[in-house]
Length: 91
Image (cartoon, rainbow, N blue to C red; front, side):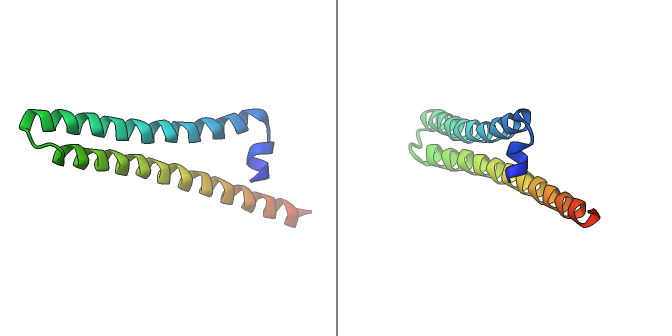
């Protein structure tokens, strides 16, 4: 992990932006789910059923995005570890 962050300043910023985008995606998913559910509940007079359903759906979408980014980051770290092992074995 040190190499990902310490490689250069731009790499550290790229990681920070990637994870802040995940937070934004999570908040946006929950917020839009709540808004859509509230609107549907008002339209069909079914409060709070659709609000809760859409809220949970929005949270699920947000957490799926989080899992996707964590998997990508983990693959990148594993690839860098393999490169380091290859460089060490070449020495």
